[in-house]
Image 1 (tube, rainbow, N blue to C red):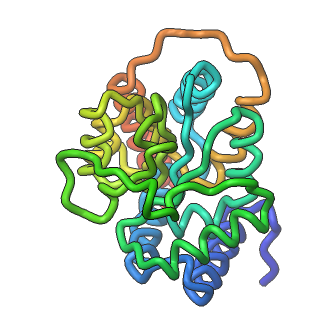
Image 2: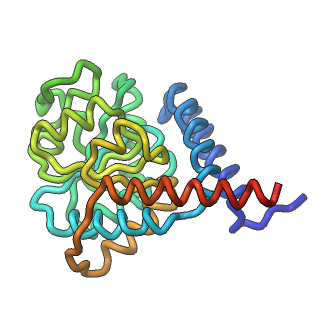
Length: 244
C-alpha cells in the first residue's frame, strides 16, 4: 500500500530511516534510537500533529530567541540527523551560535555531527575544542562540558531532546531554556521556560518560519500551556476511543 508523503505515517517512517542512517554514520547513539521510540509513542498520543498549545509555545520561543543577546542552539546526534537544514536556517536568521553537546560524547561522534552541520552550511560549530571547555555546576554527565563561547555564555539556549538534569543546571546558571519534549509531564518539560510539546521535525520547521517574522511579546505561562497540551491529548484520546 502506497502512503501519501504528507501522511503522518510516511513522515514517521522517513524519520526512522534518517535516524538509522544517522546511527550507521556515527551521529546517533543506540540510546538515541531508544529515546526516539519513546517519543513516537507520545507523538501518537498527541495525534501526530502540532497542537494549538505547541503553536503558542513556538510563538513565545520565537520572540524569546529574537530578543536574546547570545542565543545558542544545542545539538545532539538525533537533532543533527533529523533537522540539520533547519538548525542552519534558524542559526542564520537569529545570528545564533551552534554547539554540539552530547550525553554519550566520544570525540568521533562530535566530529561526525560537526561534519554534517558544516555540510548543511554551518560556518562555525562550537563544543569540539577542548581548550574552550567549561563545566556547568550541578550535573555529573558528559553534558556538563560546554563551550565558553557558546552555552556557557548564552542567555537563551534552545535544547532539543533534553535531559532533566541539564535543564535544571542551565536554569541554575541563569539561562532561559527552550526545549522540545513530547511528554508534557517530564522533568525537562516542567523545568524549562518554554516547552514545545511537539515532534522536533515538525516544530523546527514552524519555529524557523516564526523567527522570520517579527513577533510581538505576549504573556506566556509555561505551566498553563503544558496543562493545555495535556487537555488536548485527553480530547484526542477520547476521539480515538469513540472511533475504535
